[in-house]
Image 1 (spheres, each protein chain N blue to C red):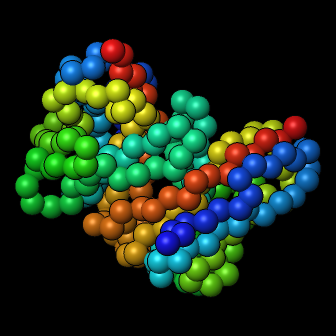
Image 2: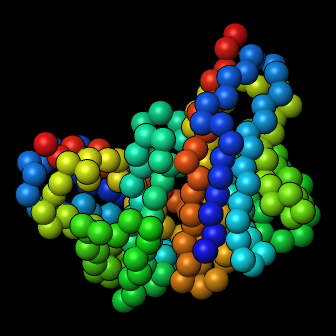
Length: 114
Length: 115
């Protein structure tokens, strides 16, 4: 069965600094990988996804993630943090088979200070 | 464009009471999901329905039942609520039968407290 580990439940950065949120996965088949963001009192929104093809994936709001099979990782990055990036971020994995569902990590809360 | 609609938004129950959380989507999606979110635990899948007429258990199904009433609606029932079921519940849907290249659309959540 697939699983997701997000390293660090809370990450703090200064405005303008690099954002790096770590995600490692376990899957018995080539995975489909996702990053979602949750702003306070809202549901989750998709940031980006990797299914096949190019391993560097670009998403909304300047975020990107790189699929590294050898490291079983899918870390999320943004070159320059903005105050509006403060939110909770979830990495998720799917084995992509019909009838399966997404499995989420425990989440990482990103704080951005001025 | 409503997307995924959950009702109610807030609910307080006493231990042993029953209730049903309602979810409806207007995007003609095949798959629907119920997750619960707890601090430090992320989102955990309770049940899902890959297509109308089918339901499957997720990671934490105990104490819950679901009904895929039709393609639009997927309800979650707590038969005898327990304090451990205090949580925020999210319904989600996706167009495909598996979330491969289709993103999940989430409702705004139901905050449930069981006293």
